[in-house]
Image (cartoon, rainbow, N blue to C red; front, side):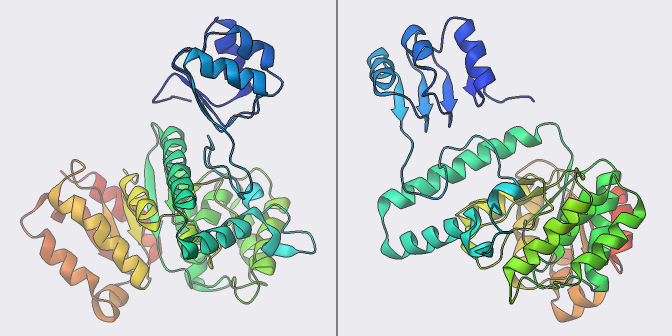
Length: 369
């Protein structure tokens, strides 16, 4: 995998390779347990190195500090690693969901509870940990997405499993993934889950998605039971292991909405503003907006602003799905169209009736001069 910083060390293999070359000078070693690497740390030069959340023995920590390295030790008694080097997986966030305690005992739920508690008491240390965590997540996300064509799928969290709308969003995710795009969503339930599910089933026969939709329909929503909702998803994953890849970018700011289990890589943030802007900024292949409410409207115009000013380069495609929704119920399309007049973004926006029209509209907009 390409790295934006070739001195970053994320794995024990990378650590051993650097030590074998004789030096850790200037490296950034991130979130590794180095308690069994004391000899290497005592022997290798570490001037200018930075150790982020690396456990090490006292004599090793004293030596690298004496070399001039910076050591940010692991933080005890928090339910997440603020220095983590990689994105979350569904298995990590939902660990324990199949046990009797259910979702409430999972790392995802515990992190949300910690966030709620520390946000309420205004602890500056907790605020700092959240900021470090979110920056580490952004770094890991950028490293994952290097060289990929990313299309975002935005839409409402209330879209229930078992509905035609949910099935349509899943077909959209599957179609985009099969075209070679990496599907990125807000990582939550509803339309977001459906698009990630579609990408997950993209390498499989078409019938797999139909069967998965039937299995999921027995738990239509994450209310009243997140546990039942999540277990249905893991039942699907267990029946079809090793599905296709996609990205989910959720937030603990909306922690009452759990992440979905079909995104292979989950970039979960504490700060929603950082998450929202980062999600849209990384969609270099465009964004499809399915029917939604306030959150989806916000995303439409969050994406419109850099397209209008071309602050990220040329405008990227925007496809809105469902004419009645975006012209009558929530008339975002007339405003978007008005903003686009006489600007390059006018050739990069489209309104279509059905979700099955979205991939072709996206292709057309991308190829319009």
